Image (tube, rainbow, N blue to C red):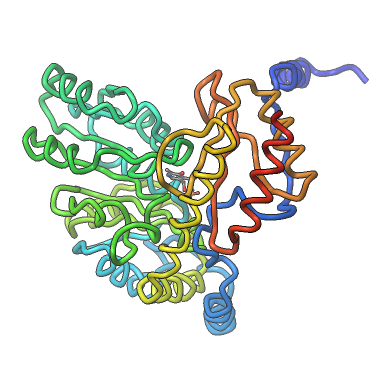
Length: 376
Ligand SMILES: Cc1ncc(COP(=O)(O)O)c(C=O)c1O
């Protein structure tokens, strides 16, 4: 059969990906989980499963329409109130995913005369939101306060300045200097937007994230809190002042032009929040495991990025090597995935080890030994 022009073009691109070690394949979970974001092991918690199953029986599967139409349910507004209280903000709005929350926030709130400063390692959902927004963008070097300060002084606009950052970076496992950013934003009248995807549920006395842990709540304009990671469910809460949340309801297109999530999700989220607020030991256990594994890897001369979080990147550099090492680990029973460009910069392909509290020290010792053997 003769290939159509379109098919030829697509097959050529796929073959180029293959040659550069960047072709992705879909693999279901296997072996010991060292790659999910189920940090607190809540995705399979019996109480959460039970609450969600009961809610499905009570309210059915689908919400049937956008929340602006017949898809609205009291369950959504109740969980949004609960999340706002948890986060210490006036209001919150639930989106179907963290990706759509970031697109919704950035495309609606940022206008053409605004100027936005964005960390170079921000997540793709933030990058895409900024690309789709009409504001002028300035990308600053990763977590570099000095460079950011200089750029903030140099660049001007007639509208509003924004700073957009993750609090705990998803692929590097390091933390933004939120305290310093908060001071800088206060001094320069810049609105601070923080993506807490990998911090909510894990950091802070009450588990609400790094904004809480760094005492910067009063200086943050909005936070985005994806709920498919430590919270173990899905979707994302945008938390902030009531006037900003009302604005999102009017203008955030991924919220408006999309069917509301299944109402049963609200019951699962409520159960998840109740566990997070009452079981501080889960996050302590996670961070202790992180310190333990980081020490083991350093002692074994395995090249990890510095930090103290539950996300531990092992930098391998070459795309092919990252894939081969990940595959060998999977064959040895450890579910570790390779992270390659464009998710991370070229030349920094890595294994992204992420921990969860179903792991224990014995498994981590076994894992380190196996990784060392494969890498040597
Ligand atoms: C920092 C960050 N923001 C947003 C998202 C998107 O969240 P979701 O998976 O709920 O779409 C992710 C997902 O990995 C993330 O790492």
